[in-house]
Image 1: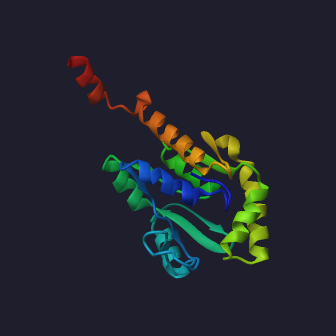
Image 2: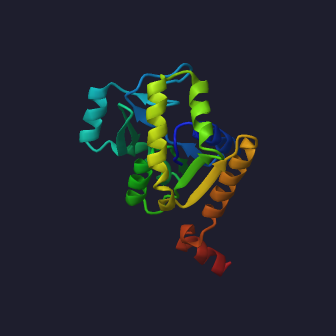
Image 3: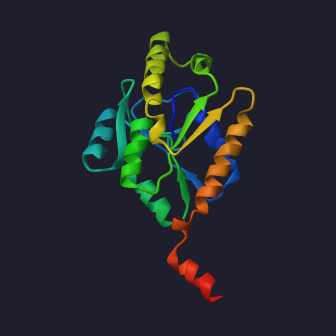
Length: 196
């Protein structure tokens, strides 16, 4: 799940997780400082830059990127272990990270999240009260750049300001339909059905 800062990805992930016990969230690592209320290992793995770069050199991240002066990455081990255990994984990399993940996991489903009006991004970022006007302006510029990649995604979910639950419903529909795609059903299960 990707999209610009302020699109509501965190809220949507929480709403989706509450509806699916087979869905686990992939906690990303970052070198930025925690925001008020964020917890290490739950919201992000907060790493010093030197530690992040060390893990990066040893292949510890499935994807990584510098974004607005900070490093972000998806720890490879969690994704590998969770998929092997039969769970679905939801993560929130930035756009290039999502595309990099899909190149390594062709079965990955990419969902682009946007608000129903781009102008809501600014008001949502300002409401956080965690960034300067310069940082907000930089994030909005990045958002316009990211939107140019929207056609490389599988789905577009519009997170309407007045109907936030509708976006969670849309995400749930995507998860349900993707689970039933025929290429996701193992041959052994098809054989069981045929022989029953």
